[in-house]
Image (cartoon, rainbow, N blue to C red):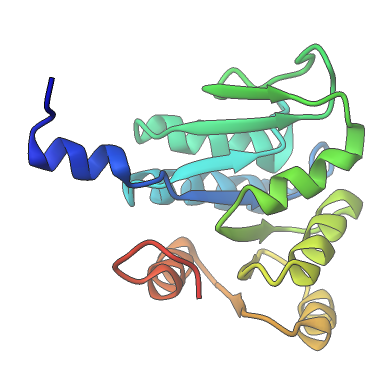
Length: 180
């Protein structure tokens, strides 16, 4: 059976995955609000949202925001059994890797958005810098932003809101969906 031309093009295109990283239980109300709005905006742009998949903090808020906009969510879970998974995760990837899953989070994302900062998020930002992944920093202390910018050898942007973040991702991905 031959697929219609438009459907064939859609099937051939890979889903763009945007990683949203941020603190878990230590996330602030502002970071949670930003992550929720970011998840919505990313889903509305047609991108899948990838997080650490747990039912806390930025991970949960970004997934819930994406689901509110009928988006696709992917959770890279630290456990081998999916314990503490967000109810808003569509595609759970159980790893049994604990914090080692952070490298999977980063390498599976075309762009990494860090919303807030905690020890796990810091490791994800560092891994993204090392892998030359484009990174957007949001809801973060100016001193931390300065540190990451000083270490960067690849694309790093600061976004004051979700519109700026989505516009930057569009600029990086261009029309063909590839990172810079």
